[in-house]
Length: 342
Image (cartoon, rainbow, N blue to C red; front, side):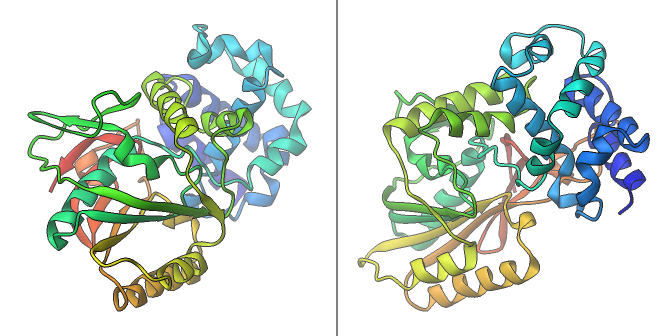
């Protein structure tokens, strides 16, 4: 990929200038074409595959600088920080921030996006209900490769709702509206939960919370509210996320003995696109080998966003698929609800 192609990728991500990130990606693309600070920052990533979402890594790096209070001139443009200023006026204030933080932003491009988007729990829960229904086993051992901070491992601590149904604790700090009629919740107990990630995030620390927050678009206030609620739950119910690659970790976890009557569910969401092909193949092999030892179901929510023009995004066509052992059960937005049952 050339600098011009990467610039077009920036422009096409939203395809409009209707919000802050639409404006910034258009301006960053022009700066990239012109050989400005953006070109210096992105120089080592011109050959990155589209799935690496270099544009989102850069926006998150800038947002972290703002969240740390090191670019107060940008705060009026960030709605999640109370900003209301016109995004079209932001670029002259962003350019010097790029120039002052070139090294940090170059490093930021090495970091895969980790929103640990907790809205995905609503989609994964549909898969989990189906796994319990298929096997008749309601005691669940939950394993998650690519778990980031492990927020989705706390799915049973969240309240899920939809037309004429609900599941999970009524007093949960986080309520996820799936907007999906026809979901049939299953009674289940998670008896063990554990995840892995190449770069696990400690959600209990201010640094970890800031890191996760930086990947959530600043104008999407509902997602920020969801993340804040999930972080509150995680501080009260911490989970273990090991620093390890997916395949080796899965092989180790699935080799361990499991009590009778416990269903192992391996689940993942929007992570496989960041794995090399060899890792994808090895992880799939580890799961298949695990099936020979214990009752196991694989739940996955995966799908690379399409190239978007004029902001178009049809969930039924473009949304990631939630599958249970390869069978499609739902589609959704990449950030979670609404959930469309299949």
